[in-house]
Length: 414
Image 1 (cartoon, rainbow, N blue to C red):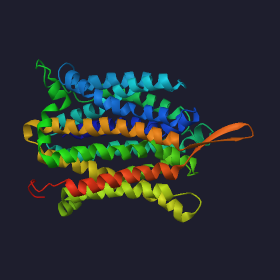
Image 2 (cartoon, rainbow, N blue to C red):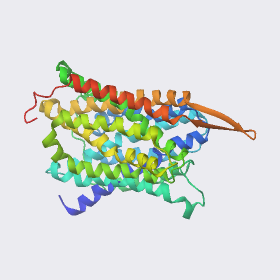
Image 3 (cartoon, rainbow, N blue to C red):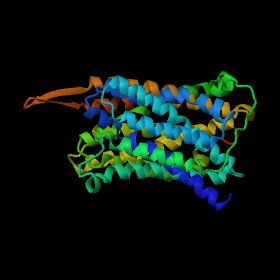
Image 4 (cartoon, helix red, strand yellow):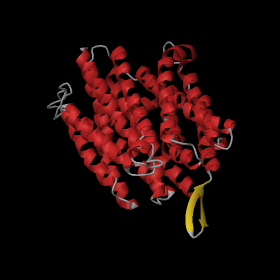
């Protein structure tokens, strides 16, 4: 691959995740300040799940058949910029949900499109893709640092994490990305003239793999583990801010830093532990993370260290379960339905699992809200220990289920 193309693709990955990292992490605090209740915040976060269910239609039926991928990517980010600005002006929960859903329907397919553009330029994706994709993680880190440390020098605010400003930054980055896409390598549609099959778009051909007991258990546990996973993405920033941790958006980028480290470590660990044990380590890390959050606090140095440990476990939680799971699917599925199998996994986790998790998290957060009136002003706080112990118990239940029922002895070399 030419150096100029590598730089172009790296910049694309950086902007792609920089956009998401700006608004997604801090949305809880902003909506809480607008007096959205837990259910309404959960509904807002569920839009990414609904979009993950809908978005395969964009990739499967538009980019693959009618228009070059870079042009579709540019259009979606341009539309996303407009919708994100619109969403940042809305303070009513019902309307906010629908506008944010429209935005996420535009954004979520860009994740697959950016990968498609990158892979189309590579002759050896196994070695060429990782150093390009890691710029996406760096983009997410850069967004967290920007949101965490910008306000004192630019806006004169104690924090912008509970304002609409991160959404405006994301909108500006989306507009920049739309312009940037015009200069990306040309990626023509690969299936022009072919008949559109819903089974291909949704990965339904991979349903035949569910006849295999272990694969069915793997899909079920992947879905179930996304329910406690959603608690971290939805509530962690609000939790850390409420208990007094300074610049929580910036501090949470430590999780992405650990993700880079454990991604590089994965090939060595996977060779020694195998798929099942490595996935169990990932699930166990989820349990431990939420226990750290439940008992972490800023009241003492030791309890504050629990919070940082909970954040740093993100790399193990994500890489050792999800990336290992993608490897398992690649090894398990026949070559002709491998893409469909990965689509099925994404549909069940990023789609169905995250939707259920966001809604459950919202309901639990609402039930754990404590309203107090001081000097005639009503304030709402949360019983965070209960909120975090519930997903810890969920993750532990999935760990036990997976440990007892899953077997991957049919895979060669594992």
